Amino acid sequence: MKAAVYYENGPPDVLRYEDVPDPICGPGSVLIRVEAISIEGGDTLNRLGGPLTSQPHIVGYQCAGTIIEVGEGVTDRQVGQQVVATMPSGSHAELVVTPALVTWSVSEHADLVDIACVPIAFGTADDCLFEFGHLRPGQTVLIQAGAGGVGLAAIQLAHRVGAVVLATASSPDRLDRIAPYGVDVGIDYSKDDWVDEVRRATGGRGVDLVVDSVGGATLTRSIACLAYRGRAITVGNAGRNQRPPDVSALGMGNQSLTGVFLGAEIATTRARAMIQAHIDSVAAGRLRVLVDRRFPLSEAAAAHAYLESRQAVGRVVLTP
Image 1: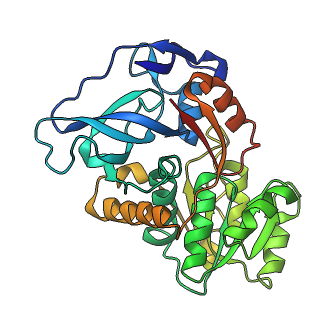
Image 2: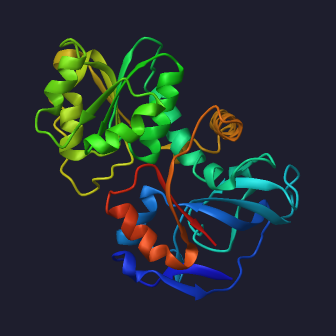
């Protein structure tokens, strides 16, 4: 099969498009013919400095396609079934093997390009907002990096339950593009006074919840946006090498800071059902995925570079 591989960590140009052996479908697993690959933020971080679990390494942990082989012991999946799947690595390829437990069924009429973008983004957003963020109707939430995959999912889910949604992006143009998804107040975080703008938008009170996927100094400022007894969620840590946030002010406002990692929950009955519901909602048009650009798998290096340029609004997708 063809795959986008690399032999060492580094910038996007370490990616090569090469022939590699087909993966073997073992017990409890399924072999999927990949039709759409969602490039996740963790994919670029792993390419830059994550472990190489094979030589050469195939990065990527989310894709959609059609099952072409079912391993021993798998009873709820069948050959020819469309699924979206997660895996530790290997999505940037024509074929991938993953445990059946982390696959979700996809209706025949669904757009696999859209569905390929759903499990991690919508599952993470749901956990940040509700399972750990305890967001309720009428409360106010600030969603950092609203133009990203998790951000756009969180905007829609928060709006759907009747929360007041503030979302940040790095320019007025990007704010305009995400506004139709349920943003009540857009905040341009390229401006130095964006914390003051959040305070003004909430009448000086602050927000009940912040979902922050950036970390570091941005997370410190997110905490400064909290209302009394407000909750801050840190997830993804796009600024992996930034200094830790200043949490010294939390106690004075009886506020909390919680880290969220969907990977620790994704195989639970609760999370599987929640993700399936979001897949079905996207397939039915009740929730939307914004795909900014598609690249062929052979141009994975260009796709990674485009994602890292921070020009994208929504998702960047590869197609074999």
